Every structure is written in structure tokens, then in C-alpha cells.
Image (tube, rainbow, N blue to C red; front, side, top):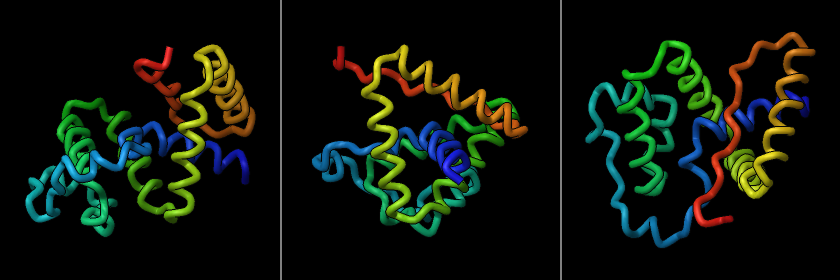
Length: 146
């Protein structure tokens, strides 16, 4: 159960990097985009998020729209991974999403060597359990944190 949750969290966090906590003032600076104003293609890509779309802050919507516009350029395996992670994120409760954000924030604060070590252990556990998950990218270092 813990391993499955960890896998889910890493996968969702990689796909939803843009949903990590941001300063509250960004909510006021970026206007929200109504679901009906999205292109048909963007709505198809982001369909799992439709029920919660209007509740998302504008900056999160914009990042997701940007990701959706990159979707046609992705390789099929990347598209599949993106869709899986969007569905996983949409299926999470608000409490699970909050825990995922907090976990990701903690992982981003680790030094790159520790991030790499944790990623390797995660990949080994999944390989040992017979699962064939898509590799989760290590969190990118925060700018200005060095």
C-alpha cells in the first residue's frame, strides 16, 4: 500500500508540477479561464480535471493549458503517462492532493544526490515488485535555492 501510494504520488507530482503550492498573490494576478473557453482539443486532454476546473486558480489553469498544448507534440508513451497522471490527480481527494504537494515540496528541498538516491530506490522497488511504471523524473532544482 505504501509503495503504491509513493508511486502514485511521484507520478502525479511529475505530471502536476504546476500544481505545487505557489504564493497566494498569484491567484489574483492570473485570471481564471472558463472551461467553455478552452479549445476542444484542450478540453479532451484535460477532461479528467473538468469537474474541478472552475475551482483551480488561474495560474494553475494556465500551466495546465500550456501542458495540454504540448500534448500533441509528445511521443505516444509520454501522452499515455500524461493522461494516467492527470487521471490519478483528478481521482485524489483534496487531502491526498495536499499531502502530495507537501511530499513534493520536501523532495525538492533535498540535495540532488539524495533525490537521485531516492529515485533509484523507488525504481528498484518497482522493478522487484514486477511493476513496470514509467520512470518518475527527479524534481527539478528550485531556482535561487543554491
